[in-house]
Image (tube, rainbow, N blue to C red; front, side, top):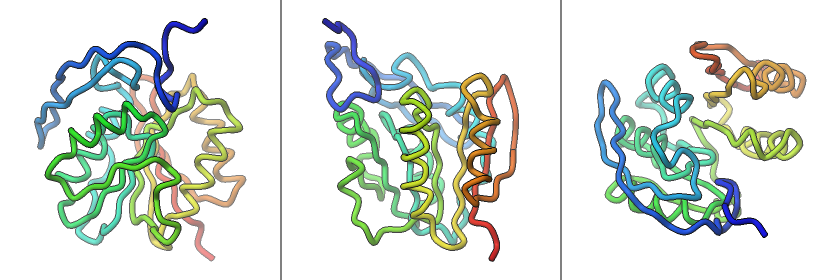
Length: 200
């Protein structure tokens, strides 16, 4: 019998143990509620931190943004603070993570949802994600094809992936599927990759 839960489970079985951590960035400091059974419950993941510090900021033209695999919401909260004009969607399959994200995004222009709860007509000017690599290559590819396909024509996505978890092969796969990619940064083994539609 499994006694622990994975962060990509719909309903983690591990007992709850909520606590508060601090997200500290050059332009932002907020307290976030975390819990067991969600991704990076001990502290902000270093890949997420790299994305939040080094990704190009959301411009004033960003009206809809997506945090794909939001966990307890550090990326979504940062997007909401930096782009208050945008509506931020924070999605995750993990029900405990979504509950935490609702708390951590209180007062923000944001919606926390399960993936199938996002209306089909919603498109995104910007996607930021530390994607759930450990769900497996096939599931990851399906996930990215689904949500990158909802980028607005001029939209962009910024993904952070560790080299040892396949960042370079993922970039090659994205390009093979017709996406334009650019490595924005590389630090401590993490790759920051920008993804756009190719010019027709």
